[in-house]
Length: 146
Image (cartoon, rainbow, N blue to C red):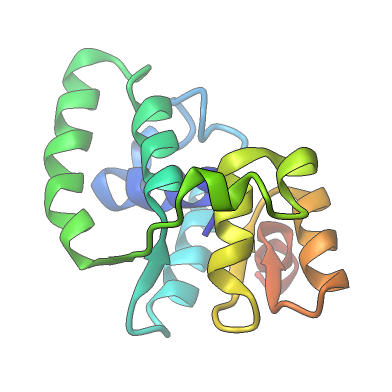
């Protein structure tokens, strides 16, 4: 899962009423969250990287204080269930994705090479993954299924 999609999942798990109010998730609907949650529940684990989790944390830091505190308290437990894989930054900067997508998305690419499906809201990243024959879904696919 890329940063924005994981943030949507985590915010929705805490309180779906925050989704349309928080500047980082208001582009999504509660239906988007419900579809994503249903999809995620079909898997035994959510696989991520420290780069993605750091970005999620940084984006969530702009929440209002009371919401932010509840979010971070909830993610303390949720992060325990995530399967986290580390890639050194020097390896990620050598990735063909680095110059085009940066560090976090390069970590997604290295993580998923033909092993895990990716869910993203980034159309350019989605197209690049599909081009490299990596299973990927754009969050808009969920909207068309609803």
